[in-house]
Length: 310
Image 1 (cartoon, one colour):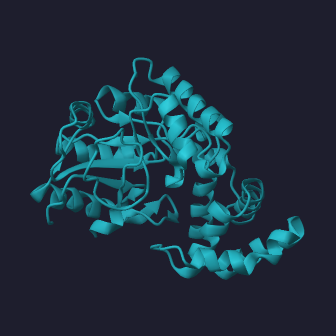
Image 2: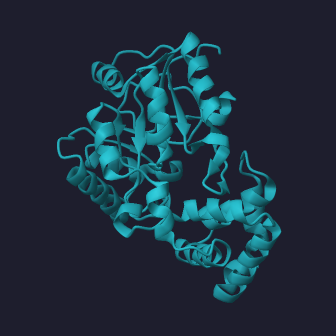
């Protein structure tokens, strides 16, 4: 693999054996692919630890062909699979679990959607169900659905068209209350199992998170409810960040330095003010690219998707 200038951040989500989560096939990175990927990155670049990264940030040193590895949403596979591979290479990662699953013992809506898409192969059936629900719940939104689909189709994605439409509607373009209601109905109809059955299987437990922290991996904020910050008021953004920080302080009692990974990479100028106010050292987006200059406080760090290195 070629060398990359500046600081480069790679974003990971599911990393699974044969892309399987129990009986569900999820859109994930295979274990062997991850293993080979970090070997390739390491050939002409250096993967640095959170400790090294913070030191260079504080000293305002320039980054040169350096990488950090980030893992969003706090999945169980990040401990059972990722940590074992990082241990082999004596590497450290940056992990960003969200609070909602632990408080409610439920799945995030985004994970419900992944399970629904894995189980129901007829994606047109899902789209038609969403349309019918919108027609009953909010006819104004239903009437604008073609314009919404046009917006979704313009988004770059690794998904096929139908999957992109389903995710776009349920994750982004519908009001959260409506999208969550539809997602819950679909989950009950298609998955037919209680959410708490999946909770412990899906996410890191507190013991694992504490252990990652003790071993000098970064544990950062990823929203309390995993909501898109750009659609929240200033007050609600502040509340979400404060609640997240307070929640993890109770678990990681000695932690004093904080970072944040914006849920869905979503932020606006208000978010940056809130993050500064809450004394966050650095923040991650989903915007692609290398980070060449870090002269200011780095609150909009770009990240590569793991698929960019396949």
